[in-house]
Image 1: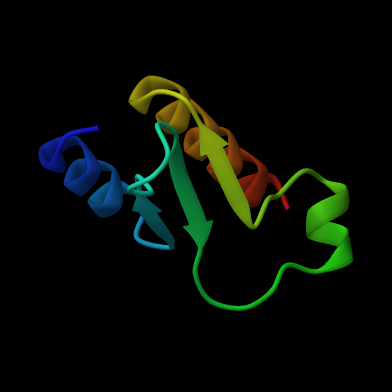
Image 2 (image 1 turned 30 degrees about the vertical axis):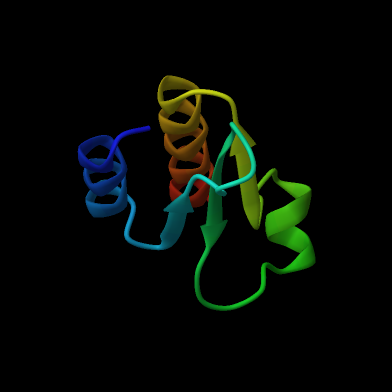
Length: 71
């Protein structure tokens, strides 16, 4: 993920901290703010997402937003 892609995702999903760990080839997005409730976890919300590509991370973040909107 280049800096422009990361910045674009960060702007689109400000409730997440998005990064590529220096020793890993994956992308990591960590939810900011409060811990998730058991109900939120039950319905599929995640505190951390790990994906191999920018495209997959973008899809996973969009899926999390859909779940949030449905709750």
